[in-house]
Amino acid sequence: MNGLGLGPRPRAQVMTHHPHSKSLSDEENLKLFGKCNNNLGCLITYKVVVTVHGEISPVTGMVMNLTDLQEYMEEYLGLDMPYFADIVSTKENVDIYTPENLQKFLPVGVLYQVKVYETNNNIVVYKGK
Image (cartoon, rainbow, N blue to C red; front, side, top):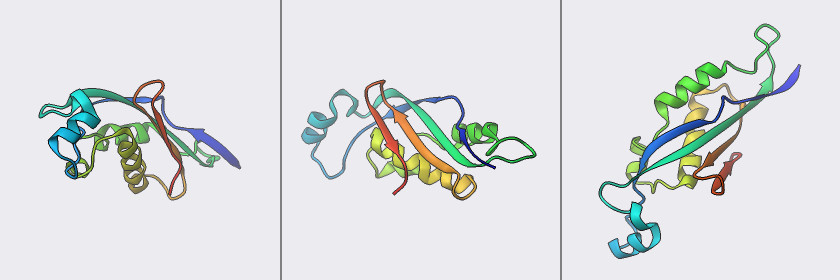
């Protein structure tokens, strides 16, 4: 049976956001990233929505257990990960980081899409490379 299973309710993640590019001067970083470009950074809440798809199990009635997906997202997704030591923590890079790390956890081919909302108007959608 083919089907589409949607990910858990949107996951709001409050993170310290410190956008800073090592390729730019301090002045250029401040001009580009504004008030968040400081030693403390600023708190930002990203809303992450993951969509999975695949065969619906006749036993469980699910594509996958979304509670497991939610627990993985809570434990392994955040801006304090080593990945962001050298990568600017923009919503675009959060959207690339999220599926790259989810692929390690999810069954092959199940991840369909990741959306990262910085605000209701600032959204990035990732559907693979």
